[in-house]
Length: 133
Figure 1 (cartoon, helix red, strand yellow):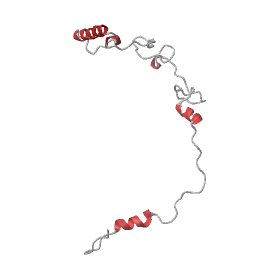
Figure 2 (cartoon, helix red, strand yellow; figure 1 turned 90 degrees about the vertical axis):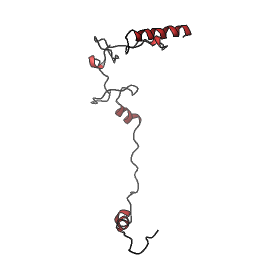
Figure 3 (tube, one colour; figure 1 turned 45 degrees about the horizontal axis):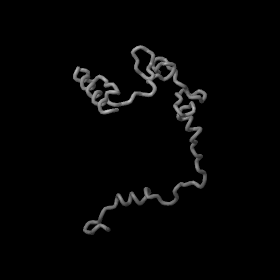
Figure 4 (cartoon, helix red, strand yellow; figure 1 turned 135 degrees about the vertical axis):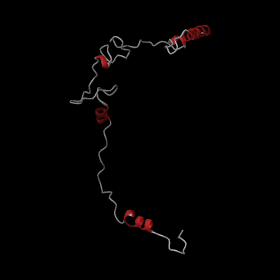
């Protein structure tokens, strides 16, 4: 954008604001933003400005969302998840490792919660003697 084009666009934006169009959207070319390569597809329902999901309509006005391809799953399929919901995609492509089998990791012996902590909490310094450091 040349300097002359920039000044012209800035002047047009100032005129629009002074004319009482405060809050009105400023056209992208007025601030130097390039136009989209492909126009944004808008819902065909009159008065709706939402983006098209499928069949020329937004989901509110009749577009049918793609369902997860796993049988009896009511969730919507997500983009880039092979036509599945996130849960089923992760179940297939990122399975959780099986639990580790082996010796039990249960503690053995005296627990600090059984005797040591109760004794230390109940401990009181004897009168006329300094507490151990």
